[in-house]
Amino acid sequence: MPVIDLAQSTKRELNAALHALTPDTPETHWSVRNPEGQHALAAGVNVPVTIEIDGHAGYYCAGMNQQATVIVHGNAGVGVAENMMSGRVHVKGDASQAAGATAHGGLLVIDGNASARCGISMKGVDIVVKGNIGPMSAFMAQAGNLVVLGDAGEALGDSLYETRIFVRGAVKSLGADCVEKELRPEHVAILTKLLAEAGVEGVSPTEFRRYGSGRTLYNFHVDNAGAY
Amino acid sequence: MCGIVGLFLKDPALEPQLGHLLAEMLVVMTGRGPDSAGFAVYGAGDADHLKITLRGPRLDEVSAALAGVATATVRDTHLVLSFPLAAEEQVRGWLALNRPDLVVTGSGSRIELYKEVGLPRQVADRFALPGMAGTHGIGHTRMATESAVTTDGAHPFSTGRDQCLVHNGSLSNHRSLRRELEREGLTFATDNDSEVAAAYISWRLREGASLTQALESGLEDLDGFYTFVIGTENGFAVMRDPISCKPAVMAETHQYVAFGSEYRALVGLPGIEQARVFEPEPARAYVWERN
Image (cartoon, rainbow over all chains, first blue to last red; front, side, top):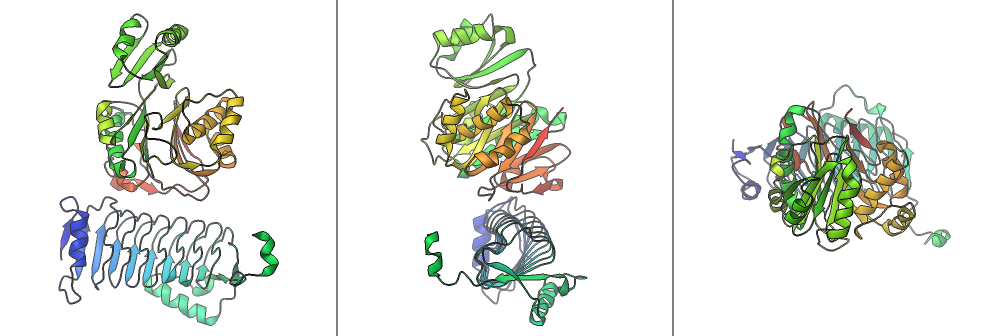
């Protein structure tokens, strides 16, 4: 297993080595030591390998990820897995702001809490947060699923498009045009699958409430012209 | 952008290392603010004495003239005068008469405040920050957005005795707030928006608010983006605006509370691997005070 010690190597050397990998690489399991909060660790990887980061990561860890599995044994800074296309990112600690921002695909699992704007403008990623999420999460979120086992902060799902939001705990407030919706069997099926993929046990999908778009902001209403 | 750091020690055994630890935190934040840097350290002092930090040229001349009244320590472009409270009028009178060109960067029983244009490493070394001892300190690396790259524009800002503030962000109502504070008798040394925030907190404290109350009322009265770290003689506080526009991460152990704009700034602290690392919530006053 390749081990990159960032006390000895630079972040650019790490990322260059990961970017040079071919899909048939035999080096499928990487370990990164002494990350010490550096930014953009394992960003832009596009091969199906596993990268374990042994400590706290800085901003944009695993950004733009495709295919890879990135595991952070610690906390992650702003924008973890931002713009992820596929693969899996697992943060064992907490995530800072804008976790999974604009991500198109893949699965982002956060064992702890995620702070403000989790899943902002998400475009198809699945995000499972085992703790709480901060204010303005799923702001302008477009597609995908945001699953929260704990509580959600203020203005959840403001100006939402079609992302499904599932919250097991309390929601401090809903943002503009975000409404609670019925949890139907197809949603229970989605939750069952995502909880299993995230390794969550002992939690029933029926403990969640579903929130989604009220779809009243899709089109301009002339009645609202006075507001502009 | 800007980087801010703060370190509040609970364990007196770390006090001799305060300057060293703070300097390392500051240097890591160079990328966030390479044009100027500054810091305040709460070191030795007592209630019967006053310390004034001054900035300007020909400081040895001041030391010599006030030799019988004040103890003087020159560090590069800054001078700290320490003297009995009873001599305050005499010292300030001499300064006003003979050296009105000197800028007072801070005063109080324990605060010393240094700032300069230049890379954080250079600034820390010029003032020999790594050798300073103290109970707490705050620092700032600046990337100027709202005013020019000058020493006056560097942080921290001190607008009350033993009080100082560093700011990452920008305020949009600082002009109107400045006028209100001027009516309340506060004075300003610069055109900087962050100085207005510092003065606002000083004004609230002067009016009897606790540090927590002062920060909470700031949520109503300060319009803009901010993460503040604030020092008082015995206290250390952190506050973020309601949408947490600017980054912040904190670490707490039985030995200290530390703040950084990024986690990277905290990695050199002792026992950081076991620290409780957390992100301060928006619109919530975090205050630590020692008895």
